Image 1 (cartoon, one colour):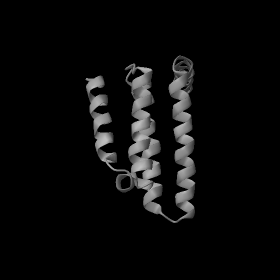
Image 2 (cartoon, rainbow, N blue to C red):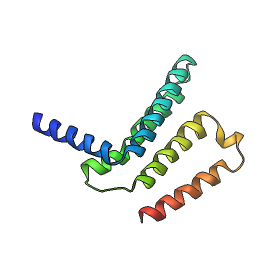
Image 3 (cartoon, one colour):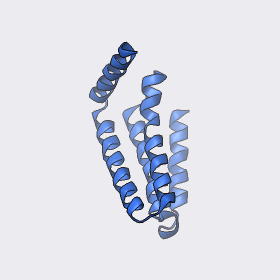
Image 4 (cartoon, helix red, strand yellow):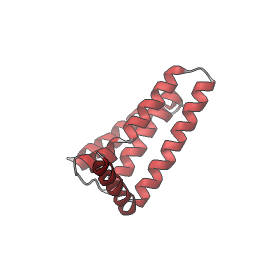
Length: 120
């Protein structure tokens, strides 16, 4: 068990060294989501808290894919995925960008199409 934890820590440190820019984006977005979650708790908007928890889980998926499944994602693709998740969940749902910004949904679907094409 301890060896497995040490191996994961080593893999995480190596991942951070190799992909510094995506790690900075990840930490920044995670901090923003936690800040929004705290604000949602103070506003007693528990649906918003749920969206924040969901976003935090979704933000971990690219690193999980890289570490557990040993699939290497390009740094640019990883950053686009992280920004897309943040834009859809936090800005779109909690910030009401779907209603405030014209064509927000269309923009996100276009970005998602490019992501799907890049992954394919």
